[in-house]
Image (tube, rainbow, N blue to C red; front, side):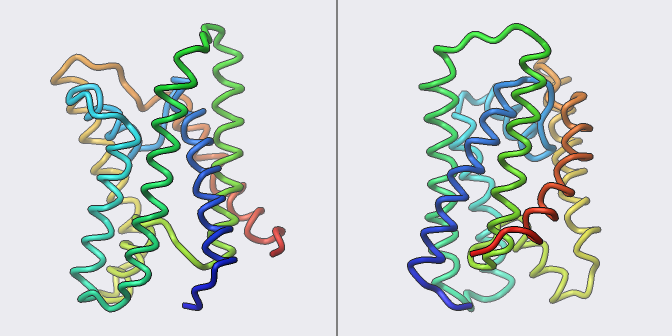
Length: 205
């Protein structure tokens, strides 16, 4: 992988915009992705900030990749770590320091926020994939397992989502938490991949 300051700058920029999109989706409170649902459930129980848990969960995937690849690409791991720190910090700033001053009760507005957040996150992740500079740790971890053990990438990625989904539901039942898997989760599943694919095909650097 060819590491350049330009590629790093673009990647961190789009990681930050991904954080904006994720924050809007969380604030809309109409459903989030499976991994975010698990992190939100743990956040409710532990009182750790959601951005902090996003950093922690992604670091676990980086560590998993390091173990499987035997630390074959240290520069990539360090840069991924920096990018994830940026992602989590921006999420915390928006969720805990900006959104508390905004009161949104109208469902239509919440739905609009969710769609806007999904659009921003999808475009940003599509751009990150197109850059092919710093992939997200979870996707990179799945790709590493897929290549090493000859297992379908899609099966591995969906397996992680299913595990996160089950964990979120169990935690919600056990600790009487809100359910974070809702109608927005379904909307996101329909919208997200086409947005990512379209951006990856059309964006130019």
